[in-house]
Length: 218
Ligand code: GAR
Image (cartoon, rainbow, N blue to C red):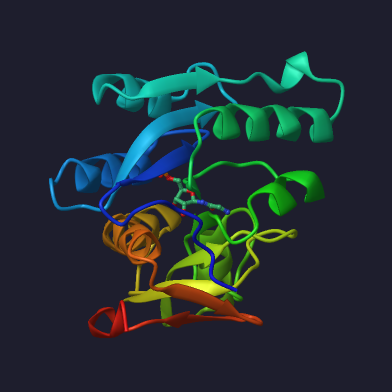
């Protein structure tokens, strides 16, 4: 299955970003998109938290910022369908979850099958869910890292696009490990979005094949 559904390659891919908090990964994506040769642009940032710094970052970059309050909906499913509506209204070709701390229902996942990415601060499938860095320290691993993967039902599962490893050092705290991982996240997420936008990702079963750019168009 090819995960992209886009128009001519000259168009920049329209990306929607979902973020609940600080938004440093959003910022990395916004910064990457500011380069004229980057093949994607962020068209909307949506948050479930009214005062998420991510929304401020969007506004500062001149990108539409939308707060969708979960309290306005009777169920998780109806909230998720509102997200689908907001994203489809803007015709996004890709959704990037960047610290969006909610579990999405089946209808949402199906709406964006093969068109939604998530970033997580561990080498999945190790340490999904909350406090990935704490889990890594508790397990005494000497290497952790970050993963960008296609979204699936389930918490932090789905075909892996890119991973980056970082060492866990003696004396690390959750904070120092998180900061070291974050440096890699900010590099990795734009790289994954570029690959998607260049039509170079193919989902084959549980795996993602990265097609060689030199073979494009053959
Ligand atoms: C990032 O470390 C991201 O990997 C993580 O939340 C942080 C958001 O930071 N996501 C998850 O844990 C998803 N399970 P940011 O708001 O500064 O981008």
